[in-house]
Image 1 (cartoon, rainbow, N blue to C red):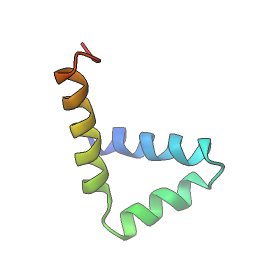
Image 2 (cartoon, rainbow, N blue to C red):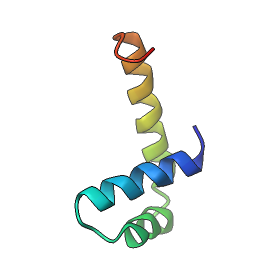
Image 3 (cartoon, rainbow, N blue to C red):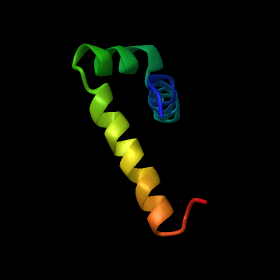
Image 4 (cartoon, rainbow, N blue to C red):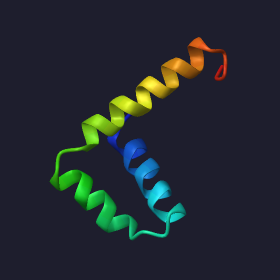
Length: 55
């Protein structure tokens, strides 16, 4: 998983909630929150695999 995937996920979430995606991504970058988001996404994928939700 790379930063591009993380940015895309944040962008998608922002769009779905009607927020300005560029501002949301900038907020995450300015506050150094991208690593935490990336870890959360990696954990979600791992749990999905462990539970058999993802192949």
